[in-house]
Length: 78
Image (cartoon, rainbow, N blue to C red; front, top):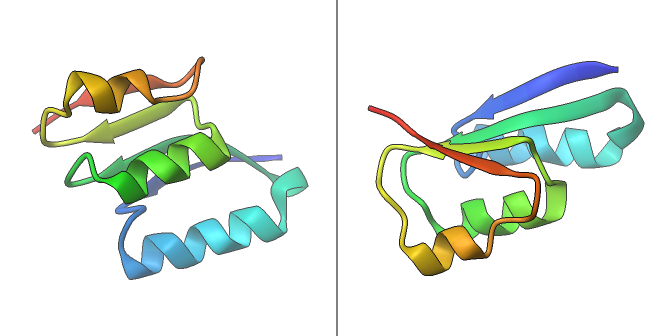
């Protein structure tokens, strides 16, 4: 099993990468998702794929954070 972090997961290349992860779930352990903004798309990816970490540059709302799946930690960076 390969461990994988996807930088820019909400963009076109990141979304295509996640399509591969979905098709071959038994081959990948998704460790993290990173995007510029705490968007609805990033949140839906986290809910579906349940990575260990989700990170973005902007500070999300408390409501957004409360919707992250249990076991997924949020990281903020610059």
